[in-house]
Length: 272
Image (cartoon, rainbow, N blue to C red; front, side, top):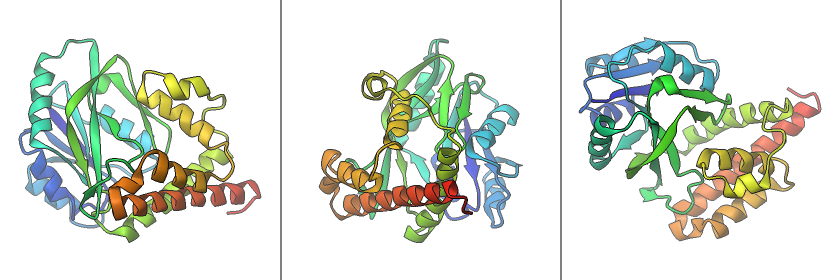
């Protein structure tokens, strides 16, 4: 079997469906950031074990969950409340967890983001995520848009994980990314990102997350980032092929990038 870890903060809307999607596990843990709604009550009613910890930053909070939760099984499935594993993915994970050699420390899964009932097949920027891990061989870094570092081999799962980032509406997405953009700007202003990114690594490194780390560091050095991001998403990645949902998502992502640019300039000028 597999243990499940779900991180929450005021997730009473999405948590019931999330818990139902992993009802095949008898070891579900909800690690909460002091919710003010019915999140914990919903988790307890569903039979999940619950924990509460004040939120500080994403990497530290997730590492705290990995090191303090007493998981029943050697493999842990990492899940957010607005995500749902497909039945096929659930079966595949359970089969592979029983038969995987010890050198495999984690599995990567393709996540399908949805907007307006449409899978953002072309618009989605980061489709692959490590979600099935041996917790003692995993560690998060970077306070925002955290990176999961794995000590060992990372294998690939065949089936998909569905993600509904707009389940609470556009306004909630904007609210969340307003916070994200502040944290990103603070990291950039403090020069805490990758200091010497490599174009070769960004294009050719075999590990997806290493490529993304170098790509992001190079991207942050480019002028006109919001416009470049929109053009890249719409025409190079093909967000236009996802119709209205794809164009909407590309525009929201460009707006998010513009907030990072503005807030970074503000911080460097001594602003709030």
